Length: 286
Image (cartoon, rainbow, N blue to C red; front, side):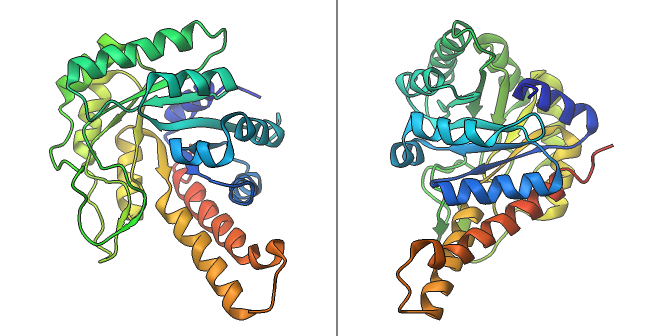
């Protein structure tokens, strides 16, 4: 299986993006991988700090390892990690990529701590990609009544992005370009600033990652990928699809007690959603 770095390089050259989907159990993992296999596309599995705590850091690494093959590349990313210790634990467990999220810190401190994570990854003996983040897009993958307090409407400055990459040494950069984590219950779609993405990609010189993708329009996704996004994160939509399917199954048969039966529609919903997004993100493939 080719490396995640190689997969991202191929995506950029081909003008498409890799789908990154967060999971919190083996059912969701199976559903996402099934969608990727059906379409013949590589896929990145993400687990946040909370999701890693629930599944287990080494346990989720073993689950993903069992799913990958030469025919089906499946990569594992330690999503939004707020401590250097958490980054190191994920690298030691065999993750392909890690995100140190210091976006809430002053720029100098964010750079310093991210640089330490990069050094640890380089010393691991494996090609572990390190992603950094600047610009605050919130931290909660939930259905929201209002814009969260930890969201900052100020978008990432291309010059600041270039400085961050240059001084931290990251492989990937997650900028603030109009999206936010979670989805508003009102259904209002975030507006992605594709022009800013193009400027940041040129200035930073590394592949860009779009966080908070749930709720964005297909047209915005396409414009963002054309502008320089190489990886797109989806989490809230996965959780919503899983819950809706579960609720429907339980309501349809209130006597059912076998989990593999009353979870089945939720798993199907996740697979269909992942298939939709993978197909969209790879539709520009040349």
